[in-house]
View: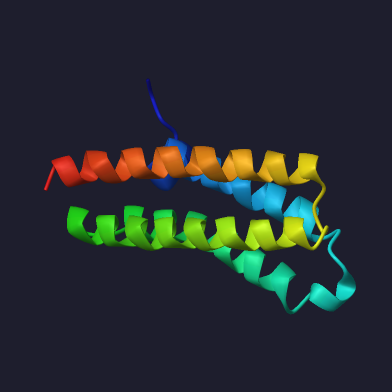
Length: 125
């Protein structure tokens, strides 16, 4: 299948597509968090979610597979950080059970694809 420039690079990676969806849903729900959390939990959760996607982008632009793998490891750690922050938001009732489950589903599926991409790259080292 022919790919346009827009489809090349990181945009063709399923892990990035899912990570981007995760970022969007995090932003969707964190804008509903209390105003006093703007520089606290809201900001921290958004940064962690963005880090997942941006590290995939940076890694894909790397000049070596080993460097790409390093960025994917950072992305995976940000995903773990997001997991904890989402749990805190749920415990503080900033997220309903349904909202939490929706975001967690995106986070979980991102993790599966991220780990699969890392395994594929590792196998080529």
